[in-house]
Length: 240
Image (cartoon, rainbow, N blue to C red; front, side, top):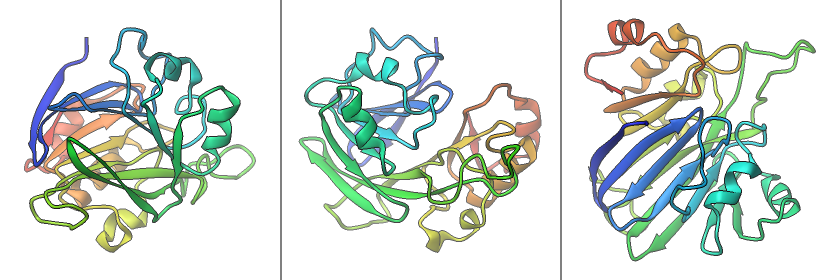
């Protein structure tokens, strides 16, 4: 069973579980539940809580998976997705509220829990390519997400709790530039660690030490050399 970590946020405590692959579950104190990229091959979703919000980064089968969604979607579930996902959701019988965000776009989710800002940021490959020479994830194809648990409605504050979910991405130039929308010193970052689709161990360390989040979760990995990561990731970063 995966461990759950608890964090204090402006919206109360939040439980964080890396379910597997790129799927993370965030649960606020009042039970409001967010999933990223649910994937049925890494977990049984049939007994899990229904989602209030699901973020989908792109349409690859291990990120958009109706076999996982069917267990955690009900009439109250909303989606925030990369472009073109709404067509797939409706094709597969999910007639829920869907908000598509292109890179750089943002929206807000509100309720009795408070306010959450969601911003889509770029996630792509530069060096990792298909045999035909095209990147596995071209620029603009999919999203990373910045999730902000907000201290004041629709007004950024130093007291906000910022979560960076990188999606399927290499260590890209935008990670070195906070003006790109990818946050430095986020409260939590979820970075992918696998080849050939995302980052090598070395690239993961580069990304981590550039972004310097307070807490860092490797995701999307086939194997994980935690000894290497612990030796090379900035010791100011809490590595989970």
